[in-house]
Structure formats: structure tokens, C-alpha cells
Image 1 (cartoon, rainbow, N blue to C red):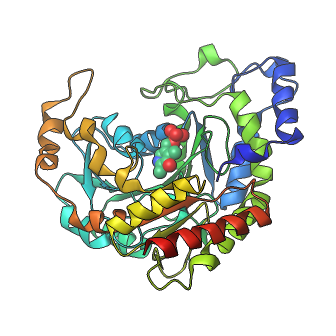
Image 2 (spheres, rainbow, N blue to C red):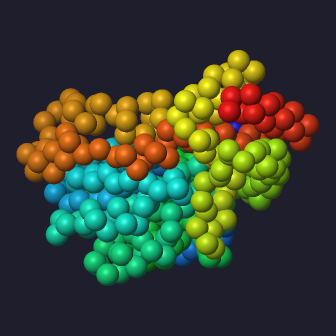
Length: 397
Ligand SMILES: *Cc1c(COP(=O)(O)O)cnc(C)c1O
């Protein structure tokens, strides 16, 4: 996945443009910037990449998710349905707004189970947020029709899924708003950065203002701009955008490499009867950022992970035993450990976490292993790795 593996003179040139002008801010300083508008250029490039009307760059993927919810009007006491398997950013972004994360089970897609979503809807539900973990998606038609039926906002967290598609459309463009991360380990990186994409011009304008202290960005005198509503600072810097601009131009090349290496790994494991792969919904195409497969049971998965470790097979994850990505280890969330007071409404809304169990999610996550697809491998390295993985799995069954 990580774009940093392939840094080149292209990234250096873009960064030097910014350093030479001295303007690190994405807005204003028109006379000093030698015509360089890296953030704006990157926004246009992403619109072309995704075939979407509007893009707003922000400071991180976490910021992108929080801004995406804010610009659609989600706030205090609203419930947002999200999966148990994601990154901690999902509930952070919801709670930042005083809203309530409602965690529901995943299915064999490793993403939201539409049936679990349906069962979690209450009068307070305002949005559904599928997370396209490891480059693949939920049954988005089913989730979209639940949204339509209940008048809910659909926010896609596509932070790990740049390049994936669903029924011919880029992931991130299926819902009302899509979110991307360009942090240091993502397929395309800015170092830190994120983006919100949408075809809704009102949401786009909201994002433009909200992510920059509510500035309306009318005219060229920043001091004279008005504030139609409250905002915060979620801006990206020109330095980060410059790195991303070089990376987005190389994205087709990155995605091709990912796919090639993914196929090498997958083919090596495909004829082992005990190995099954995650389900990709009809019409979906994975980004190939990871290869995810299931083993028959937890013990086998743990044995395989130990075997991978002993054989130098790195960057494979067993999320069941991992602190970042699965509810099982999120004690700080379950105990609402906050530095500052959390509202009584949110506390009440999250009480369900004291007792709720997630057997269905456990069933899939306990048996799943996820292998990051590196772009810096040569084809030979990918093949050697694939056959070593095959050996370890066969020896662990
Ligand atoms: C990386 C990631 C984020 C957050 O992105 P940051 O840029 O690191 O804040 C959110 N959701 C998912 C699924 C991610 O993988």
C-alpha cells in the first residue's frame, strides 16, 4: 500500500516549488507564490481521478471523516452507524462532533453487514458510515437503499480504498460524501492529509468554509472575508499537498503494481481448500491494497501468524489481536476514557457497549489474516513471499 516506498524526483520537484516561494499556506499570498497552488491543483486532479464534482483537501483522514459528517449537519446526540472493524478514527471523528457512534457487526465482506445496520436504526440515526477496509466494500446497493428508505446520509470512509470501484464508480462517490486519507502509510501519501469528495455543491461549499475557520473565501483579502458560520482549522499545508500532487499523477502506476502483487499472493493460496477469501460484493473491484483471507479457526490463524513471523513474513495482520482496528481491544472506547467531560447524552447513547457482544464480527475477524501489499517488492520477491506463505499455511493446518 504505502506510496512512500516509491518517492522520486517528482515529489522533490513539487516540494521545492513550495519551498522556493516560501508560501506554505494554501490560501492567499497571491503575489508571493510564483503561481503555485499545490492544494488547488491536487483537488482538481482528484476530481478527475474520481470523476466527481468537488474535492476539499483537509489535514488528515480523521479530519476528512469528521468534516464530512459536520457538513451534512450531523452533531450533538445524532447517531452514526459504523462497523466494529475499522480504524479508531471512525468513532473519534463521530465523537468529536458530540455525536454517538453505533457499532454494528461486519459480515464476510469484512465491512458493514446490511442486516445489522437495519437492526440498529433508531429515531436518532442520522448517517451510515461504511468503511471500505483493506480496499474492499460492503454491499453498497443494500446500504444505499436503507439510507433512502430512512432518509439517512451515506458517508463512505474510503481511506484505505483509493482505486477501488463499485459498479463502475470510484469508491467514495457512491454515497453523499466520500473520505480519503493520505497519511504516511496510505497508497497515495501527502505525509499527512485527507480529502472529502462529493457531487453536492452545498456540502462542498460547507467543507470549504468549515475546514478554514468558517472563512467564506470571497475576494482576495483574507482579513475582509466574512464567516457565514463557525468553523475550525482542518487545512492541509502546501508542502503536504505538493507531495500528494506528485503522487496522484503516479497513482495509475501504483495501482497496477498493487494489483500485480496481490494476484501473485492470491494465486499461491487459491487452491488450498482451507483458505477462503473475503467476499467482494457483486459489481465491486478491490483496490488490492491488502489480500484478506480466512482460515478455518482462530487457533490456525494464530499458528499461521506465528509461522509468518518466524519466516520473516512481515506486514501481515491478525486484527483480532491488534489494538487499532477491532472493537475487542478498544477498552478506552468502552470505558469512555476522556480527558474532558463527555455529555450525558453521549454517555447514555453509548451504554450499549457495556453489554453488547459481537459474535458475528468475532467469527470473521478471529479467522482473518490481512496481508499488506507492498509496492516496492519486485515480482520475484512477491513470488518468493507467496510460496513461503503457502508453505507456512500448509504446515499449520
Ligand atoms: C487511515 C485511516 C483513517 C484516518 O486517516 P488519518 O489520515 O491517519 O487520520 C480513517 N479511516 C481508515 C479506515 C483509515 O485506514
